Length: 260
Image (cartoon, rainbow, N blue to C red; front, side):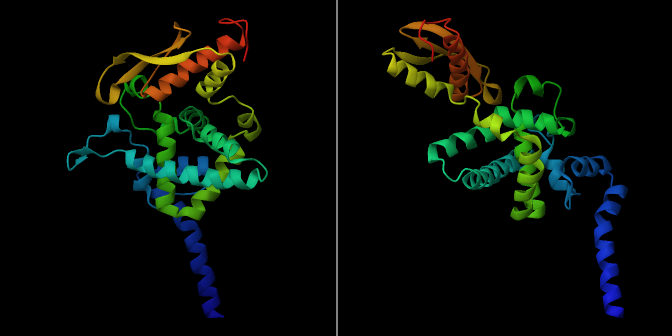
């Protein structure tokens, strides 16, 4: 009887321990913010502090490398992709590999993760410098992935999987809307060009900045005529932006009488 009572007492202490720890911590605001957003109190708060530390605000260095959330971002990206691949495989048992791949790409795209991060209120927790929003347009999405990496290190894979599905996908993402949203504009344009026997190409017309700030200005050309331009931190992303602009113009017959 005594052992049972002692066991119950210990269980109650363990339940309230995270709350007590959060209340007296100097990181009380971060503890409570994560609890409000994701429904749990962190164990190792230092991992979460790192997840919200953008490289633009990092002062500490180790072996000549600035300490930031980039390594956690890499980890979170891998975990997020794996969980979503499993989730989609089970949700759509009769859809082919192409559909599943495109759906996963939509869900983990930088644009979607940026919006998701803003919707969840993660932006207010990010440590960054004043100019970072102009230089790093994917800062919110990168931080989201870093947060997933922090949860994994703190709580393990199964816990992280439940958070992604039950607290993120089911609460903040409209799967039906994502399913019917156009995605790979470049592929659509190439398919259209082949069907209509039109020539299509992409040229890098300028490189702006250098290092982490370097952006590529890409021009989309149809039948030898420059149509649209896109600018981003990678050539592939810039091509997608230029393709999206052209796709929308084609869809409204602004470029050709032939719509796609």
